[in-house]
Length: 423
Image 1: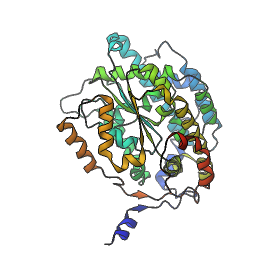
Image 2 (image 1 turned 135 degrees about the vertical axis):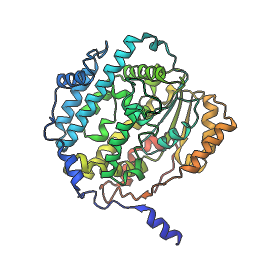
Image 3 (image 1 turned 90 degrees about the horizontal axis):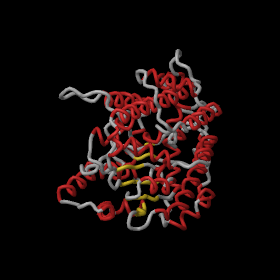
């Protein structure tokens, strides 16, 4: 087989983006369970969480999350394109994170020593979605001196009971079942952003517990919430994340954390305030390439969440949102000095991953032992790029976005960080 034929076999083209094929499973997900409401008030969400948490009713001293929840619910009501099933999924997620908050507060109340746990020099990875952050965090997590966060653990951070010898954590089982069903409906997701319950995940879920996570935006179109989010200080929410990290460390150490999220890119100042001894690594990629990839991933999964799907509106939304994120990053970048931070250009990262590894370890003051080096290099061998196939993107044809005009929007970012334009 020729190289061209092999490449074509590995290419994934999603040709029904604007008019998706709706399978019976997708139709059922769009409709949602008939006996479950798709609208709730703040008090109804909190009451449901209290029931699911076995009667726990203390959400903590800081009740500012209630206002953020009210804004979130109103923004979802204004998103007319959401399917009924999508609304139910979002509400279920909202209830779950409030259940988590109840368990966090209950555990800390019973074990106040948790708040004395030091979170030692955490290593934060920030960067645009689709800029290599997932690869980097999963790669570095091979170093067991760093505490990292699995997807299933992020979804349910409090272990409610001791496990029997050899028992698989039921939290991991629940997560694996949920994401297995999701990927069965959307088989190309593995090539874009696989959701393996055991993989290392973003700490976005920890910010959800204070209702300040930007990931709602991946599942809905909520301009009201975005405006509110940028108009308010997010530092207290990162302080709440620190409390959750202390709980997770209490369950299982070590206490030096490896964390990552694109959202960190627009919260550099807040993170520096809450975690002053941290190391910040920021990946940078051509935002046009990011848009191609991100809109395709979200547009593909929108067939579950939206009817109609409207790819051009999705692309315009994320063009605006990424510009806003990058402007915040440029404005706040000086919060971190060169002794605690590094900017990693995507094209340099892909060209020489070992050099990036050594740079990060040197910055973080971590000794790169021969044993750790072997573990890290082994990960690269096991996880080549495009392992599950390469998705073909068409930002202009499918999403109606003029790339040249869009690129002009990011001139300020190209001037600050010399990322390579990806054609």
